[in-house]
Image (cartoon, rainbow, N blue to C red):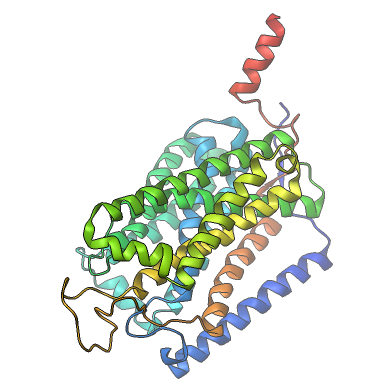
Length: 416
C-alpha cells in the first residue's frame, strides 16, 4: 500500500470554467422559473387542490435522500473499518452536503411563501414530522462539516470514527424522517404505510451511490487520474445489492397494501389502470431503474466496461426520479376515500371519484426549478474539489489498501 495523497481537481481552466458556466446557466434559469412562479402564483404550475406537492418536490426529496446515501461510502470506510473505501471519504462528505443543500433549496423555493421559512425555524410543533426534519437537516449539515474536518486535519484523526458513528446514525434518522413524512400521513391511502421509512433508507443507499459513482468516474476521467478495477468492481456490486434491496421493499410495500381489502382498488389502479403512474412504475421504476441496471452490472462483458457501468448508474438515477414521482405525485392523484363504501356525488377535490385520478401535468417552470437544485449540488461539488483537496491523486489497485478478501487470497497463495 502506498500513501494516499489528496490534491485539487486540476483540469484545464477552459474546461473547468465551461462546466461552471453550464451549471451557472442552469441555476440562473431555475431562479427565473422560481421568480415567475412566485410572481404569478402557483396557478401557473400543474399543482391543484389534490396534488399540492408537484415535480419540484420530486427533485427535492430525491436530492435529500441521495445526500444521505452519498455519505454511506464514508461510513463504510470509517465506521465499519473497510480500508478500501476510506480514500473516498472526503468526496463522500462533500457530495452529501452539496446534495442536501441543493434539495433543501428546491424545497424552500417551492413552498409558495419561502419568506415564511423563518416561522418554521422559530415556531415548532413537535407532533409534526416536519418540525423534526428542521433539526435533522441542519444537524446533518453540521455533522458532515465536522466529519470532513476530522478526515482532513490531523488533529481531528482521533475523533474521526466517533463523528462517523454519529453521522451514520444521524443520516439514517434523516432518511427515516423523510420517509415518515409520507408514511405517517393517514389521509392518503398510498402514503399510510410505515414501511415507507425503511424503504426510503434503502433507496437513499442506491441513488446516493449512483450519483457518487458518476461524479467520481467523471472527475477522475477528466483529469486522467487512475481508478483501479478492484474499486470499480466493489462499488458496482454494492450498487447492485442496494437496487435489489429497493426491489425487496417495493414488493413488501405492495404485498402489505394487498393484505387489506380496502386497498385492492388502490393497488389495482397503481399497477394496472393508473395511466402515466402505471407507466412510470413499470417502465421507469422497475425496468429502467432496476432490471436494466442489474442486467448490465451482472453481465459478464458489459459489467466490466466502465462506460456501461456509468450507464447503469445513470439509469438508476432516472429510475429513482420515476420512483419519487410515483410515490409523491401518484399517491396524491389517487382520490381520497372520504366515506368508504359510499359514493360522493360532488366534490371539487376529486374525493371519492372511483376510477379517475386527479389531473396533474408537470410544467416547464417546475422542471426548471428542480434542475436548478441539481445544478446547485453539482456546482458546490465542482467548486469544492477545485479549491480544496477532496480527491485522491490515485485510486489505482497498487495504491489502495488491501481489504480482507485480498489479504486472505494473498495469505492462501503464500501458504500454498
